[in-house]
Image 1 (cartoon, one colour):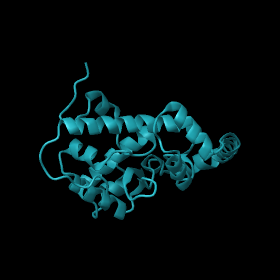
Image 2: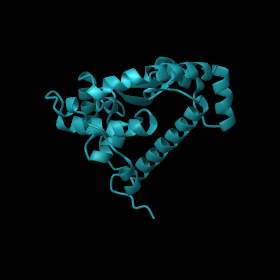
Image 3: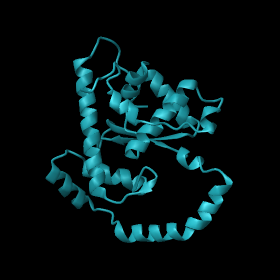
Image 4: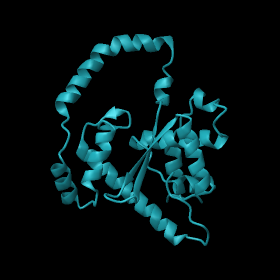
Length: 217
């Protein structure tokens, strides 16, 4: 039986996460200490799904702070140039549906910042070009009608137009990598939305009196 911790996460979830905080983040005097820790958590979630889907409430529960504090820490990371934030609005309104965070500089790639890096780059140039050409020949951007039909078949309530707009904006990439299968990406969105619904359900069942803070930064 999986034991759940006070922050709502299971021990198995925590053990499966790993975070990377590169030197330029660790030693940046303009970053608050908790912002550096939050950066590490964002890299962990980005590594898991290709982007960080977590809300301010998720982080607040994880670290035992207010959502306002999390909002300020994320702002600190964005203004320092380490994190990007993309907000998806409900069509025709200013209502926020989702907020996605991504890492500006890939910390895993920074670990290759050695003389060996140049040799690897030279040796892999032709291979990378071949892979890119193969990708370009294989992947075909779906039409709005195709996404709408697939989402309808799966009855997942995903807004096809939002899906198209999001990946048009980021060049049809999942994290740092070109998308290979848009249907698999939709299924990932389904799992993410299920997690969000479960988190909201937990919130309602454990809701205490107090001020409600802004959900997204």
